Image 1 (cartoon, rainbow, N blue to C red):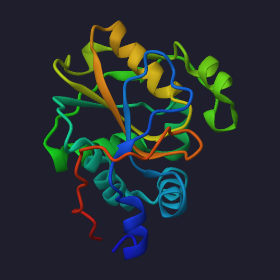
Image 2 (image 1 turned 30 degrees about the vertical axis):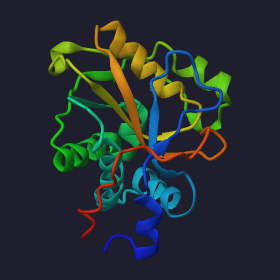
Image 3 (image 1 turned 45 degrees about the vertical axis):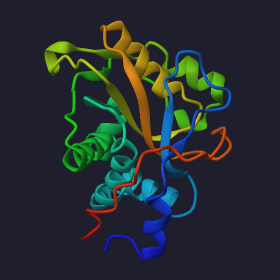
Image 4 (image 1 turned 60 degrees about the vertical axis):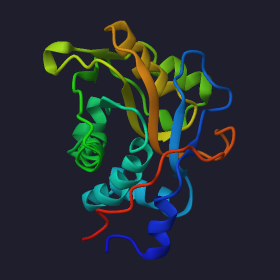
Length: 208
C-alpha cells in the first residue's frame, strides 16, 4: 500500500462543498475530497515537491471521488507554471487528471496553459494571489479538443480561489463554460462549511 489505512482514510474523504471565504465573484462551485491537513497535506507535499509520483494513485482516486457524481462531460486540469514543471520534472495535475479520467471515464480536455510567468502563490495573501495570477492563463484550442457541455476544473488545493478563478476566466474567454471545480483538499480557514456533497467517493486504485 502507498498509504497506511489511517492515512488513506484521511485522503479519501466524503466530498464536500469548499467555496473559499470570501468567495470571488465568478468562481464556480468548488468541491473537495478532504481538508488540507494531516495525511492529505503530507501526501500532497510529497507528491508535488518530493517526487513521490506513486502517490498520484491515491490522490487521483480522491479527486475522482469528487468528480464521480458530477454531471461532467470533460475535465480540465489547472496548469502548473513553466518554472514549476521544469523544477519538478513533471506536471502533477496532468498525472492526477489521468487518474480521474481512468476512474470516472470522463475525458480530459487539454489546451489550458500559462502564457506568462507568475510567482509562487504560497507566500502571498488573497489580494496578492489575485494580482499574481490574473491574466496569466490562456486556452489554446489548437493544442486540444474544444470541450462542450459540462466542464469541471481540476486542481490539487483551493485556498483563496484565485487560481481556479483565473482558469475559469481563460476558459470563458475561449467560449467554454465551467460548471464546477473539484480539488483534492481545501485549506481549513477558507471553506465555508463541510456540508457533504451528493458525490460518492471512489475507493479503489489504492494499491502499490
